[in-house]
Length: 227
Image (cartoon, rainbow, N blue to C red):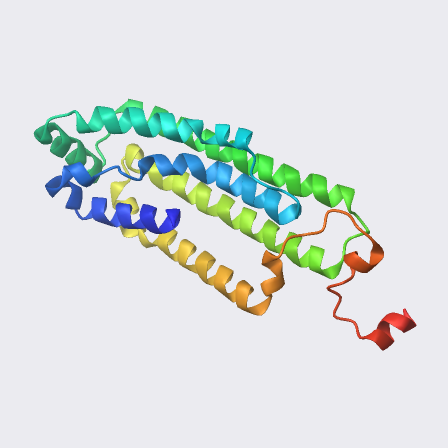
């Protein structure tokens, strides 16, 4: 949902929609601050079947809430003409230095959660080395694929954010479809994996008996007996 909103917002901004309707701009901007926490919690839920969202986990949403409230209040208190000037500057990629400072902090936050997610996968793999079932492997392979793909999209996003600041706006405009194609491939991969291997979304057993660990094995009873 966030990807859809973000891409839709980018298209509307690129074609100058918000210059005509500035009051509708930036309504989803703060959502980028929930991408990191969502990715981290998704990683935990994929690894540990007993993971559940606790009240204290809501603290991870504080940056999103604070930034959204402060920015929306500041922006919508501006006169309409000033809002239009802001939108024109965004469309023409003529942004002040403070914008790049703020976006750098946001990227650091997302990057930190990506690191936490990779760390959890690495820690889990170390714990269950030589003990996990075929279903566990499918889940871990899927999770690793997703995290690496998000990392690639994240790096592309960083490049495209700072590209206009380097004076290479022409390159930015000519290659604007690159991130769209990347996300298109990713979403199709999710659908394909979900259809081909629906068990990847069922969660992973963290610990259990031999029977539970190998309950998803594709082996027949005869093959199991031989082994």
